[in-house]
Length: 415
Image (cartoon, rainbow, N blue to C red; front, side, top):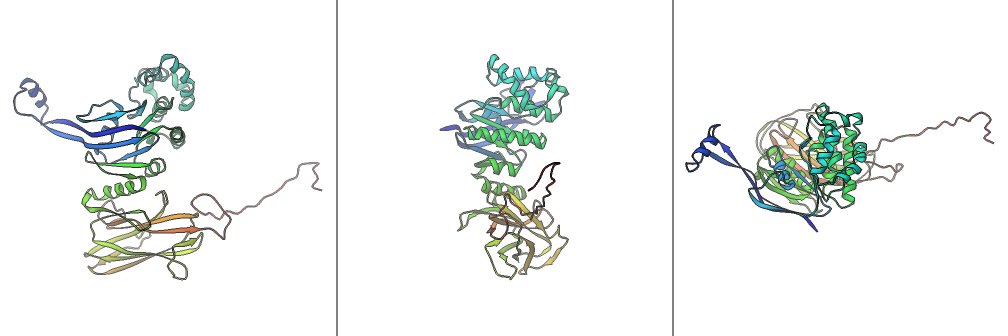
């Protein structure tokens, strides 16, 4: 069942030329316009099925919060339409709708009414809200005395007191401590298992990729990419560096994954190999064995300074490890056009069994977000096996050992 349908959605605002322009427009409505139109959103289309989790990402000013406010019903669109089937719970702005002079308990009652709960229903939900928020006696103190973390705890507890059909969360969880973030995401995952649809705005790549099925990337008010979480987040990662869609391309590889490539093209990777300790190319590696990652690069334009690095990601796109020549204290300088560069990183493959991919980065400085020569996601795919060590869970091998000491109690015999 389609729970959310967005059709040709747009939101425009008037930007007046001066503080007197608005007054002049009221007094002289038939005269020439004294404002320009700014489109915060334009031609956004999306369909969301019941039980899906959709991530929405974009740089500041991309239109993320505007989109969520329209879906939640707190802002009206200029063009297009939004159709929702089911009850919506939105956690948009921290403490939105809370009165600072009222106590937490009083605000819970008012917020519950805004969510459409009946008076008896709110009273029955209050103990669970108090228990989940864990703010103690502050529940009976004015909200103005709350810290931002306490405010977020109470707001989230109210918004999720009953499982909604559609839950909207806009960056609010980034305020809380790690314990409450874990607790909140556990509730979100439980709701998802029970059929709740989720719209999540976050700059936390790990949260987006671990929870969301699809991701929409907004840029300058338009949806420029929508697709599987890892693929869309790779695109967004490249967009943050380039700010230019024409410098980003995505190519589907023979093994099925989509490779994202971005950058100015001053330097480019033409081969990536993983070598065993004997120097032979491998695609499967035993846990704990020494390997060499060989990255071959061609120089297309003269480069005074370059930083070369790599990143290993698991099958879900979560970052396992990354390093570059800057962090290793080995500068690369004075490269001429048509030069070739071979970078060899040696390390022990202390990863857990599974499939992984390697991304490469070439930039002028330590971060590719400035002067990005080339960023290449999914440049090489390999597997890690574990046939020689004790089996373990997780993504890294710590080679733990065990020793035990048995102390017998008085009067106990080991015969």
